[in-house]
Length: 409
Image 1 (cartoon, helix red, strand yellow):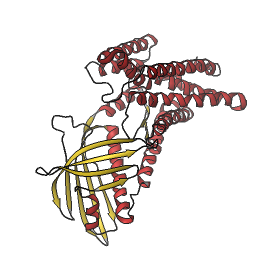
Image 2 (cartoon, helix red, strand yellow):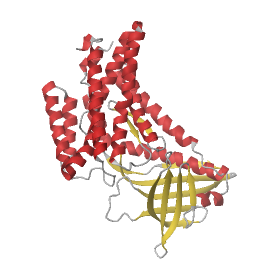
Image 3 (cartoon, helix red, strand yellow):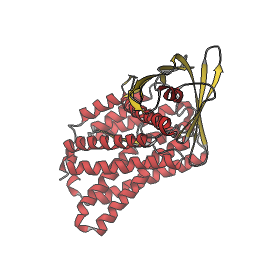
Image 4 (cartoon, helix red, strand yellow):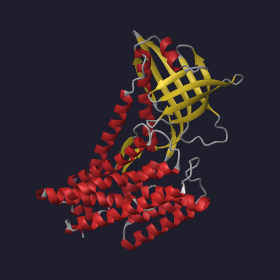
């Protein structure tokens, strides 16, 4: 029933199209509107910017301080308390460019002169309109260039944010529930779309196994974020491509980068071992478990290839930076050339495309993991051991599972 796995090819143009869409950047202005049961004055107080203001949003506390009275520039400091007790800080400068009390507020980002505006929130506008016994709050966020996936996230964040404001104004406590429900809904909807996309190419049974393997893999990344003390991240499925798990907060060290990258294939080892147990304990369903194990192994072995943006490439990037410094990009380009040559040798267009992407990504000099604490010698040794151990485990299990599905060999 999975014979179509050996006839892959029709999806390649669609994969390339989705890759291009993912990397295409443009400015985006998400908008949201919500009715709040409160007077405009109370809503305005919740969104206004003034020195001394403090807000509590879940694990994050923000404080506003006036830093330039003449220019009317405020600094907003965000402090997030992680589950391990440590804190992460982030600060940004803002100014009020238009303020009509109780009806309109416009806030602009400051301090970006000479810097890239990509992925930066440049301007916020709030419009308040009396409506019945409450207020209609309309928000627009003006973002700098963002990739297609980030544009979806920007819209989700805005809707989650406006519900937080509604909860704060009406009940005195930010309403976090819609924020989490929206994240879950995005995961489920994109999973169903991906299921349909894979089913169109491979059939429903194979598609279901791929989604299961992807979900476990990405949950490994989410678990890594949580173990590092972060709030739970997001999981988004990408039709014809796979899935992505995104953290809520930036990483602080290269060690965290590698740990998060390898936790995806690391947790998936348990799914592969569970498939082995299924073969042994439930022989009547052995074929299905053989296929689940094989899909898990192939997906994670591919993900461990030492080229970005795959997990293996992310781990290699940080280790090469420790070893080669600013010349690390040449090591990454060499890995891309090897994968591309392998693709030509075995006739796999996807390997050629991914290898070519790795080469082009590193043609220009770039900063690798800028601002992050570098690896220690011990961390490099542990990371290298973990990478090799995972690769060895998957290679061993690949031989086991292929014996159970000789039709594809």
